[in-house]
Image 1: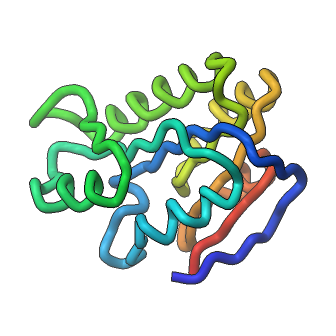
Image 2: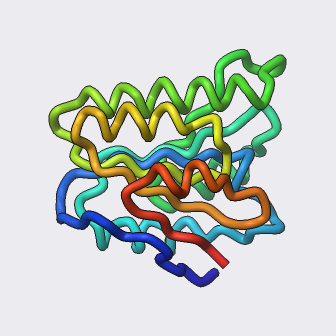
Length: 154
């Protein structure tokens, strides 16, 4: 996986909250290496929160791999009846909590999904730097345009 920074308007070494949209980006076709992702984000500051949001289809092996790479595996609400949108809502709520946390300076979203545009907008409104990490196909142009910094994965 190659990291290409395509937009960077703000950069400081501060406290970071990272939220990974598991069903959207933790897929075989993207080959996302969470160790490399964590290292890339650590260049921006200190990771204080690092969560990968998963749905009911996440295997025990996947959960174990996520935890061993320094992330918390956050299972979406609703258990076996959870829908993809439930995972998005759970992730958005968690990200919004960080927007209002005075100990967090930067919000990192790893997603391609335009559903997280309100999170980016609210984070910026509250003085948080926003970093978006994603990949094609389907990487939302609206998200890219809204974030302070964009890192596109190849």
